[in-house]
Amino acid sequence: MEENEGLAVPVPPLRSMTIEKYQKVIAFFKELGFEFDISRFDDRLIAQKLVCLLELKGIDLGYSCSLYVRGPYSPDLTQDLYAFPNEFAAPGTGSRLTPQEKETAGELGRIFGLKPVSLEVGATYGYYTLRQGSDPLEAVRQVKRLKPFYSEAQVALGVSKAKQFLFTPTEKDLEALKEETGIWQRASLTSREHREE
Amino acid sequence: MQNDILSIFNESEGLNAKVFSLVRFKLLASLAALGQDGATYRELKAALDINDGVLFANLNVLKDMGYLTSGKITSEGKELELYTITPEGQDEWKRTRAWLCRFLRCGV
Image 1 (cartoon, each protein chain N blue to C red):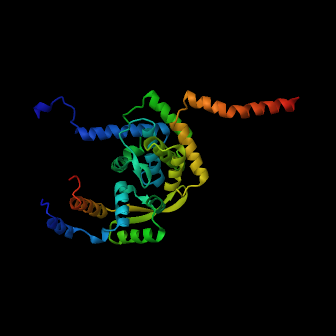
Image 2 (cartoon, helix red, strand yellow):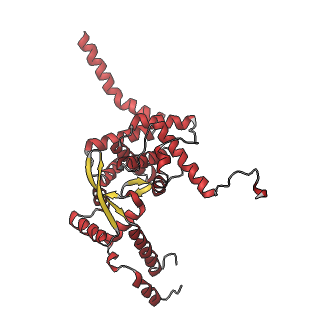
Image 3 (spheres, rainbow over the protein chains, first blue to last red):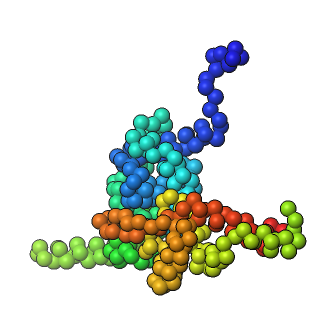
C-alpha cells in the first residue's frame, strides 16, 4: 500500500475517456437548458439530434453519427445515455464550453429550440448534404423518403433551420442573392415612389 | 475452429432457422444498432420500405420468439408503437451474424 501513497485514485483510461466525452455533451445540454429524462422518448430523440447537429457543425464530441432507421444517430451515445441517466439528467458537469462552443450552443438553441421534429428533419437534411454530398433537392427528397410521416410544412421548416445553422453564406452566395433579389427590391422601390407621387 | 464447409454447417444447428429471412434480418440489424432506444413502427416502415402486412407479421413473429418487445410511447402528443430488441434478440443476432460471416468467409 505504501507505494500508492500520494497518488490519485487510478481511473482506467477507457472509463476516463468516456466520462470526458459525455461531460462535454452534458455541458451543451446545460447551456441549452435541456433537462434530459431517459424515460421520455422525445428527450432521447432530442439528445441524439442535438449531438448529430453539433457534430455536423464541426464540434467533435466523440459520438460519431451514422445513418440508421431513425436517421442520423449515434449508438455510442445511446449506450452512455442509458449507462449514466442521472448524470445526463442533473447536469453538474466538470466540463466547460469554450466561448466558441457557447456561441454555437446559443445559435443551435435560438434556431431550433428543443423541438424534436425540427431537430430530426434538420439533422437528417444536414447529414445528407454534408456527409453524403447530396445536392439540396436530393437531400430534401431523401428526408421526405425517410420521414414521410412529417408534413411538407414541418420538412420545409426543419430544412430551413438546418440551412441557417449549418451553412454560412459565402461572399459569392451573398452576391448571387443580391443579384437575384435586386430586381424585386428595385421594382418595389419604384412602385412605392410611384404611389407617393 | 475448422474451416471446412461441413463443420460450418454443423455449427448452424445452434441457430434459430426462423430468423433466416431478409425482412427479419433487416429488422434485427436495425433494432440491434439502436439498443434499448428502439424504433417506432412508422420509422421502421419508412426506412426499410416494407409494406404494413409484411412488417406487422414479421415484427409479431420476432416478438413471439422473445427477440423483440413493443410498447406505446408518446411523441409530440401522438401515441406511437415502439419496438425494442431484447437481450435474447441481441444474442441471437450476434450468433447469426458470426455464423453468416463464417459461412460467407468474410474477410477471406
